[in-house]
Image (cartoon, rainbow, N blue to C red; front, top):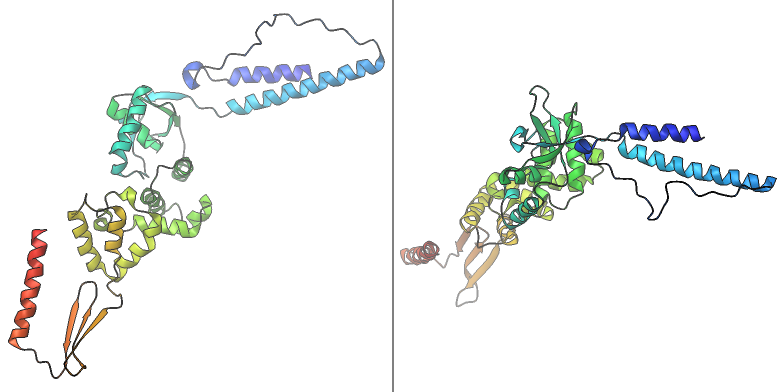
Length: 345
């Protein structure tokens, strides 16, 4: 049994990474006041005492072996960390981060944290380039890499080789799943890139692979597939909520021209409208039930009926009410006044 302990201890010492590769190994903790020589213990004199002592030694041995197994598991598969030039790291095949992730107060606060620690404390993960030595592809850690690049710092990275595109995407997905930072749009973009690359045969296959609800994956994909003019109508793509996906996609399908016009107006008003304001403006249905207004004559019967919806107005006259030049002029004057109001805004 003692020989097995000695062998396991030697194995741990052999596979423990050096301080320069994976961080300095923790020193063995000692109890204050402990001596270098073990204290003498009184040997049992009776057979039962000897048996109990042997059982105690066996339990101690089992505890030591369990501890050694944990140490072995800790070091098995450990990879060295290297300080890399951020310029040597390409975005990789699945760059899910939007440019808006690298601007604004939240980004500046994140960058200040990296600057304070003189680099990223938590390493990023990169894949060694298959053909170009000294070049790498991003697996995860885009924000940390960008922050180090802007600050002129090296980025601490774990380098792996032989990683397939599927393994790369899954590693990125699981790492991002533990963070609250990726927005619904960015999450959808990640899913869309994986489907476009042929990693999965369908959104359902993707959802099953990562253990996500199919409806949730669908909503994320809908957001990532919205027209550019719709996405840019919002204050930020990161401000679009996943619960808005179906209504936005439905509005684009039913009234593409109307949505495009309202998106253009929202882009012109950018900075004055919140994300929910833009959402409500874009999802006003052109097919909604029109409002009906009747204008009654002196006899109580309607002489004209107005029907209006989101972008159209219909005027229907009865037989008693004729379309006279005076009526046409009045309508034209009213519309011109409304036009002038819009120009002054």
